[in-house]
Amino acid sequence: QMQLAESGGGLVQPGGSLKLSCVASGSFFSLYTLGWYRQGQGKQRDLVAYIASSGYIKYVDSVKGRFTISRDNAKNTVFLQMDSLKPEDTAVYYCNTVHLQSETPSGNWGQGIQVTVSS
Image (cartoon, one colour):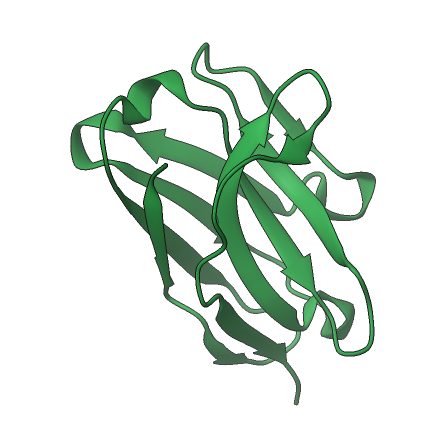
């Protein structure tokens, strides 16, 4: 299984933007479906978006039109561009491989990265 490391989080005001990166170590990165998850304080960890090896992309309704997931297979990296951020986007964000048929996480969790949206 791949090891994943997230970066790019921080504190941003409502309406602002952040871009998260997740670098993977391991083989066959281009064959995996990669996803971003988030976990707010006291809440469960939920899928935010994923991008399949084919390029197929899915977002949860709450981030549609605001977040953009992309990948660079040459750099073993998946990105999450987050625009028009809201306080309810505050969470620890994680990347992971995704089992496409069940849309469930299929790999090891990294440490995650904190995103805080606050004025």
